[in-house]
Amino acid sequence: MFAMIRRGLVYICVACWLSVICRIDAFVISPTSLSTNCVTSSLHPSTKTSHMKGWKINRRSKKNKPVSLKASTSTTYDLIVIGGGSAGLTAAKFAATFDKSVCLVEANKVGGDCTWSGCVPSKTLLSAAKRAYTWQQMNDSYGNSKIDDTALRRMLQDVKKDIDEKRNRIYEEDDSPKVLQSLGIDLAQGKATFRDEKTIDVSNDLNDTSFQLNAKYGIVIATGAASPRDPKLDIKGLETVPYWTYENVWNEFFLSIDQNPTQQVTSKRIVIVGGGPIGCELSQAISKLGCSVTLISSNRLLPTEEVEASTELQEVFEKEGIQVICNQRVESVSKSDDDGLISVALTDSEDTIVGDHISGHR
Image (cartoon, rainbow, N blue to C red):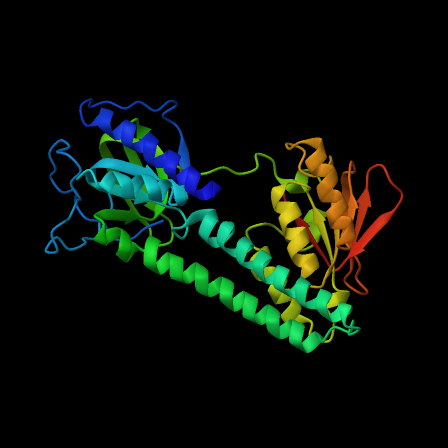
């Protein structure tokens, strides 16, 4: 629902903006020193287009095949979009319907957090976790409380396969370079740095290429956001232990199960730091999949929401077996050389939390 609303708002903003830039040949970005990490493939030269004539779909000639840009070459587009996440993709695709030439610049795989580390994997995992939890509750109701570790592992393998298949299908059907090209959108992969309000330099260190892109009307910055502070600066010893983030947990969690075939899944202990939406969502999912979870929050759960919601959520978590520690900060972490367990020390408590893995989220 929120994704649909967000995409709708982007459509409205881009539509209003395009209706203006089709008549005003100016767009200013300040400061001009903005830069972002962006990646690179072959590009088309910009097609010649006139000012917007109604809602005409941009159908680029099939004879206009991609041409690899050489170093120091310059290509002009009506619009450049930096960032290939959900917002950038929406802006680029919508702009292409105005019969404007568009280039999308992206640092990593197109699709952004939503496809690779956000909505798709998290909701798939939550759905599977709910089924696993219901299955266990039914077994408990009929007197069969023993969990079959082999069956649980097989189910987790199916979940990982399902996540990978959904991410790849969405990418191939909606976000791949082939799909973008069919819509008249060129993809530039590399690092983008602003020269001025309508010019960027794109470079790729992997293949040692660089070129310049010019925007006739303007540049959309849709690079998303990241935490402004390195978590290593907040928690002593974090750099000495392997830890999960929202970006790698979808692979690392399942990998940790496969790498320890002798350890029961239900005996695995996960420490999650951060009581925001991602931390709460992941805590419940992993807990319902059978693992023991301790959730540590420096504030109450979901601190930006109503107090009643935080209280209710904590009660639900505790009923489901999640250990919730609120209003505590993690001071330091360390890893034992003997058994590999991770110890977590809190600032205002003498208790030490011990787990197999630690995961940090907002």
